[in-house]
Image (tube, rainbow, N blue to C red):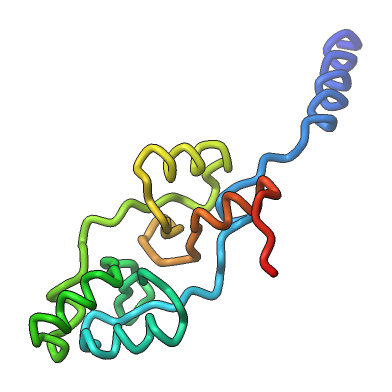
Length: 147
């Protein structure tokens, strides 16, 4: 029994030296500006201009992610004279998401391999918890500093 406890102690000491993995929830932006499906494309355009965002998640009343809208969609709607149409008519419904516990190296690979600019972080029920951008990844590598 003493050999087992010595092994357990050695394993504990070893694990204590392993640095804790950074996960999606550690680096995500938690205060996310999101759109509702019934807002107009003009509302979406105004919000994007005011927040300097090039894309926004779309959530239902319960905060569940149901889609995403890109700035180019808002511009297309305006050019087509359809600024009064609802966001739900223009949003992309197939949005890649990640769980909050995804390790940093995996989410980085996910972003790069799909050349995604922003990645929503959702819980098991699909509720939007935060968002990760390429800038967040660069910041994690100390390659980006906001001035």
